[in-house]
Image (cartoon, rainbow, N blue to C red):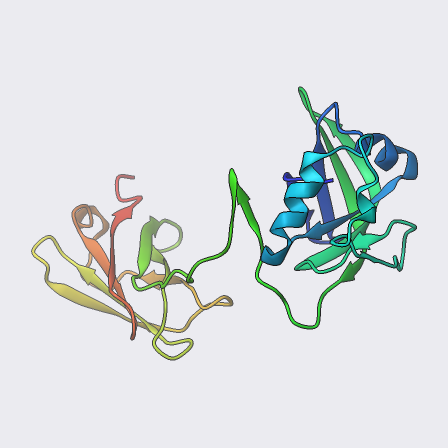
Length: 232
C-alpha cells in the first residue's frame, strides 16, 4: 500500500511508524503478522506509488505488477519493495489509537540501502522531486544574560562558514553602536556556537537593555540579536 504518513519516531532503538486509516485493508495483515516493512520511495517510483495508492489489496494482487520488485527479508518474514531510498523491516512494538486512525510503531530490525542512493520522492498533495539545496548565507543568533556567581552572556548562533568550521567573533554593541569585542570562539559539536562569555569589566548589567550582540564568521552575513534576561 502507499502509506503517506510514515515516519522515523525514535533513534535508539530506531523505530519507524505508519499511520493507517480504519478502512486500510493492510492493517489487519500488519496486526496479525506483528511486523511490517517500509520503503521510502525514490523519485523514479512515482508511478508505482500512485498505483499502490489507487487500489486496495482486496481489489487486486498488486505484487504481480512488473514495477513491484520485492526483496528477501533478513530479520522478518515480510518482504520489502526494492528501488527506494531506504527500506526497513520492523517488528510491531505498539499500536496507538488516534481519534480516527491508528499509529503503528515498529522497531527496525533490518535496513536495506542501495549502492547508489537515489533522489527521494516527495509527497505533498501532488508528488514532487527535490530541487536545489537551500544555500545558507546568514548567521542567526540569540543572546541571554545568565545570572549566577557572576553575570555571563550566553550566545548561541548558527550559520555557514566559507571553508568548513571556523571561529565565531562576538561583539557587544552599545545603544550608540560602539563595539566591545567579546573574543573569538570555536564551534561546538555540530559547527554551531554556544558559549558563555563573562561580562567585561565596566559593563554593568543594568546598562544592557538596548545593547545588541553581533556575531560574525568568515563566509556568512553577520547576525545581530537583542539580549534577553536583562530585566531581572
